[in-house]
Amino acid sequence: MDTDRYIKKWLEGTLSKEELEIFEQTETYKALKRVSDAVQDFRAPEYNIESELKRFNLQKSRKGKIVNISWQKTLLRIAAILTIVVGAYFYINYFWPVTIETNTAYKTSIFLPDSTEVILNALTEISYQKKRWKNNRKVELDGEAFFKVKKGSQFDVETSIGTVTVLGTQFNVKYRDEFFEVSCYEGLVLVNSTFGKSELPPNHSLRIVNGKVIMGQFHEEIEPSWLSNESTFKSVPFSQVIEEFERQYDVKVVYEDLIMDKLFTGRFTHDDMILALKSITIPHKISYHITDENRILLTSEIE
Amino acid sequence: MSKDNICDEKVFNEIFRKYSRELHDFLYYKYGIENNPKDLVQEAFFKLWDNCHKIVHDKARSYLFTVANRQMLNELSKKKTVLNYKKNEPGKRHTRESPEYIMQEQEFSEKLKHAIEGLTEEQRTAFLLNRIEDKRHKEIAEMLGISRKTVEKRIYTALKKIKEQVGEI
View 1 (cartoon, rainbow over the protein chains, first blue to last red):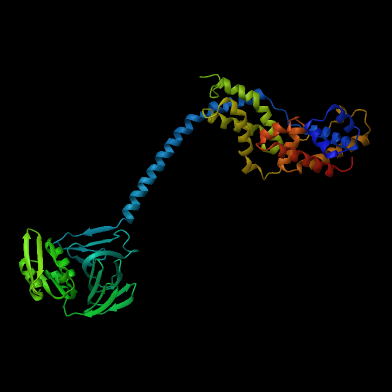
View 2: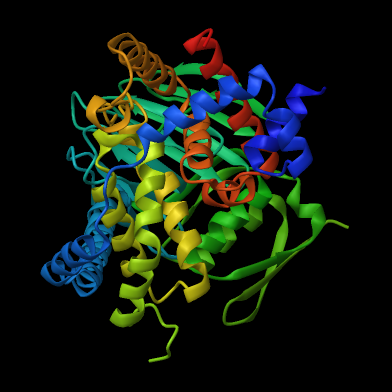
């Protein structure tokens, strides 16, 4: 006799009459029966449906639940949205940087929160975090700017090529396309780039162009010449000179490839375009031709 | 309102009358007297009432059992289950028995109570529903949201465990 099978069938109540008669003769059955009978004592206690329903309906009317909850939910939603909006406002106000930019042919001067003066050359953009200046002393630069740092101040000037760390000093940073140049006028600056770290004492410059680092010296006295409306170059590719010219006069200069590779040493003024054109063309035997209001054609005189 | 809309109070009251005892007994076997099965029934019906517009009439029962199965697990699972045990009153059932026999019977009941309380919640619920409420495996499976086979296994295991504990009878 397969007792297990009998027990399972008995539990489910699917034993046939004959099977049950056989099973009832066994000791197993008697034991099971006794347990099963005694288990009846553990029946769930009295439950009065009507009184429980009354209790339920009383509670229900007291709570007024559905309406209440959806109203509270709406209020909660409004509160949550308000919190997000207000939070976002403060967040943006706090973390959003201040950005200043100049147009072609314009220069401007601003003060950083530590009263450092920054003079921006034409077509330059800088940004910094005004509200968080104390913890985040950093200025992002695209273009050219001269920094007159208040004594004891420290901050970083970041460009995508290198970072300049300032320790109470005056210096110029120029970052145009792939051309990066730092010139120190006073004190000491630290330049950090993918090519390593360098310290620049006064009258020293560092230039990174075409992936090469070039250290140089210059003899300008107190500040870069562009502050007195002159651009000065020392062995700079001619294309850079023309770009600077375009920035200062808001013109488009068209030139032959031949001219582009020449290196230029010299200066041009920001106040007189014809004079400036002469300053950059004569030394290289280039002739210029102003085709219309803001278009200039340069051609080499040497064939 | 349609006849089957359970947001209708009359319809809802009918559902309460129809299922609340079954739900109560189920909750009692599952969680024991300590966890106030009557209050748990109320809670489950409040959930149903709050969601009455989402639940169709035919699904009300299974919704109630789903709630009952999940609702209280966190708070309850750790409390030890104590079943209400009706002491055998000698006058009632064993009038003609000797005092020794009554003693034996009481001892047996104590052992049995201990054994039942020692079962896992799953085994106990299935076993008691089967033995006391005469529920078929299929019905228990629906109440618990598990398979029929699992129910069979739980009941059988529970019985085996109890037999071992109450010893030779």
